[in-house]
Amino acid sequence: MEKLKCRVLFMALVLALMAGCATSGKTNQLQLGMSKAQVLEVMGEPSCTSAMGEVVLLKYRLFDYGLLPENYFIKIIDGSVEAYGCAADFDLGY
Image (cartoon, rainbow, N blue to C red; front, side):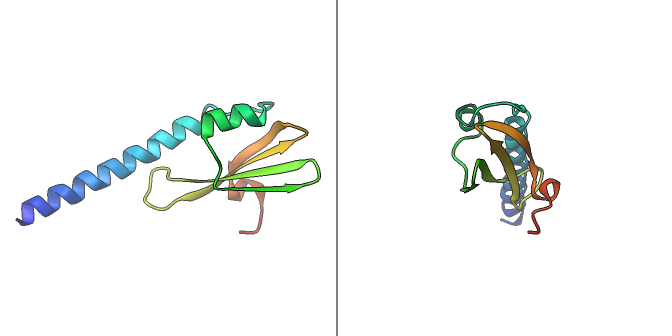
């Protein structure tokens, strides 16, 4: 019974790591200048959207090589991607 628990735990860990790798593939497809529609096609719907004037921030909670999600942002100005990356890349204070 103990071996079965260890195997199940090991498989869950492997699947979690594989899911993280899948999200990396999505972010690697992003490019500066993409439209919001192109971003949504690659990344899917964001967990949150914020806007101020002509600036739109799309927030994604991605699992990348770990068990805890990381905040990932895409900054769109005047309809095209101007920047993207983790929260630390944007110095957002959270």
